[in-house]
Image (cartoon, rainbow, N blue to C red; front, side, top):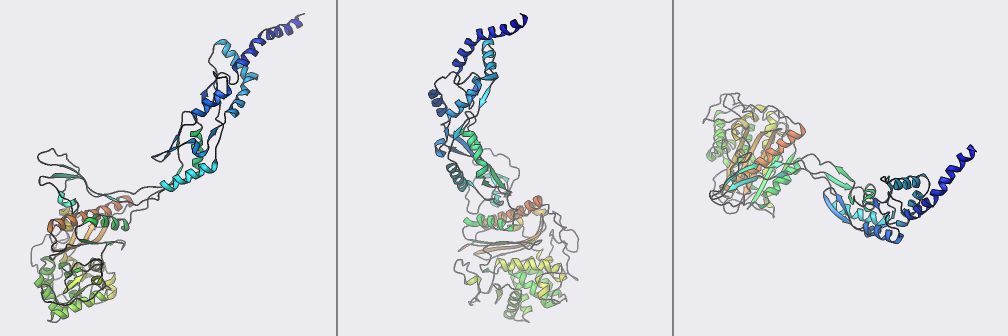
Length: 551
C-alpha cells in the first residue's frame, strides 16, 4: 500500500498541474519569457508576422562605420542584409520543452525574474556586395605613410593697444613671416612655435577580410550599431634631406622673385636643393673660390701679403682686395687670374662658375655660355664678368671643409698643391665675415652659434654661403635670392633667416629622434705669421685662441 501511494501521489499531483502547464506552454509560444531574439525581448508578441515586422524595422537602420576617425554610413540594403526572423523563432522553440521550460514556468508561477536566454541574430547578406563596399572605402581612404614636414610659426599679436599673449619663444616678426606677408604698422607679436618639424603620419590600409565581421556584428545588433574597420598601419619613414628640400621649396614658393637654396649634411654628404643650378652674379660669395685658388698657387708657402688680401676680401668684403688677388693669380694680369680661378673650378667639376674681369668692372663683355646661364626657365640677369651657382659654391665650401680634414675632392684633385692646413686657413679667414644677419641671424642662439659665412650683394640679388656646426654636426647652407629691379633688404633678410631656422630645426629634429650627437666643433687657427688687419670676435675663430663657442 505504501509503495502504491509513493507512485500515485506524484502522478495525481502531475495530472492536477498538467492542464495549467499545457495552458502556460501555449500562452508562452512562440517566444517564452526571458528569451531574447537578437537582444530584443519580444515575448509579449504572439503573431510571427508582427515579430518579423518589428525585427526588420529594428535592423533596417544604417550603421556607423569608422575608418580610423573617419565616419562612414552603411545601409543594410547596400549589402542585401536581411534578418531571418523565422530561423530565430524556430530556435526559440527549444525553450518550450524540457527543463528550460520547467524553469521558465516555475519562475513565472513563483513571480521570480526570468533567466535571460539569448538567440543570436540570424541573417543573410551578399558577401560580394560587402567586399565591394569595403574595397571602395579602401580605395578612397587608404594612404601611404607620409614623411615629416615643418610647421610655420604660430603667432599671438595685437594692434592699436590690444592685449598681447606671451609665447614660448619671442622672435621678431620680420625673422619668420613669409616674405610676401604684410602687417599693420602697429603689429606687435610673439612666436609660440618657430618652424617646428613633425614626425610624419602613419600609413593605413584597410583589411577587407578582417573588416567584414565587425560590420556584420553591427548590422545584426540592436544597440551596438557601430563598426571599426581593421586597418594595417605603416610607420612614417625617417626624415630625409628630400623632405628638407621639399619644405624649403614650399616656403619660397610665394617669394616675390626667385630663390635658390643648397644644403649639404657634411656628416653624410646628403644634399637638399631648391633650383641650385641657376646662374647668379658671383657677388662676394665668389671670393671663396678666389681664396681657394690663391692657396693652391701658394703651394704651402704662406705669403703674408696675399693672406692680408684674402683677409680683407673675405672679412671686409673688399672688392679691391679681391681684384688684387686676381692680379696676383694672373702674374699681374686680372684677366689671367680670373681664367685660372675658372680653370680650378672646372677641374673640380664646377662647370657653371667663371671669372673674366673681376669686381666692379662696368665694361661690356659677353658671357661665357654655361648650362646654368643658358636656361630658359629662370634668368637672374647674372653679371657677365663673374658668375656661379648655389650648387657650385655650396659644394666648394663643403670640399674646403673636407680638405681641412685631409680628405675630399680638393685633396684628390690637387694633391700636393693644397694642404689641409691651408684649407683650415681659408675657413679661418671666412670666419672674419661677422655680419650677423641673414643665415646667421636665423639661428636660434646667434651669439652662441658656431658659424662661418660669406655674404654678398648686387642690386638684384643677395647671397649668403655658410658653414654651420649644427645639432647633429656640420652642414653647409647657401641661399641666393633674386628680384627683378631691386632685391630689398627686409624681404631678403627675413627670408634668409626663416630658411636658416628651418634647416637648423631639421637637423635638431634628426639629432633628437635618431640619437645623433654632434662632435666638438672645429677650432680654426690663424696661419703662421698671421698679421691681423682688423679686430675679429668670431665664435668659430678667436685669433690665436682656442675658444670655439660651444653651442
